[in-house]
Image (cartoon, rainbow, N blue to C red; front, side):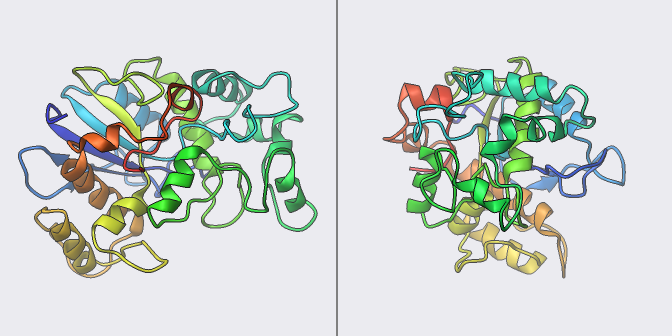
Length: 294
């Protein structure tokens, strides 16, 4: 796996709007040096469609990490959406369903899917009575449903949030759904591991969880966000990366992307990370995996 020349980390956002301050892209080169942020085409931030174009036009073998869920739980209930006859059979069919139901949504947003009469009942939309929906159908606890990879994340010392959760600052549902729209529109131009087999050459897209990179960077405790250049440089040193230039405050979207790009460079050649014990062909095809989870 040392064939990659670049490592691109994408901190994603599912927020509404044409441009997102919450999207950050950072690149680390295989030959070394500090990771660097990629400037968005507009000072207001990246558009999700611009990230799509960038991924479609990768010119060097690049390992891309997307900080979003590339699929939804399937193994726990034998379906993404139990009791819904339109429930897709695999991840790529799920992406197509989401993108199709969001045809009228601008900016790769996912409102059309979440407003769909059948699809909406599987997600946690709010607290109180609305939050009770989170128990139905298929959820074993109030935390909701989780993929096999997310159980592996917990074993690694981080606490993921269910991709069916749309509530709170830690929710990842909206970003995951918008990300799945983007993956569908890639039209197989870049393989998405492990939904697609790992190719012998060229670029590859993986799912990442920035909190896992932070752990390897020495960040401890329940909070995994880095908000100063000094703390970021300390974490980068744990990943054998030179520090980035800067002092004082840094937004956590940028620090997540910078740290995770360096983490991908550091760990990508670890064979075990490409062969986690729980990753069966059926899980790869339906739920996908989080790179780095064992």
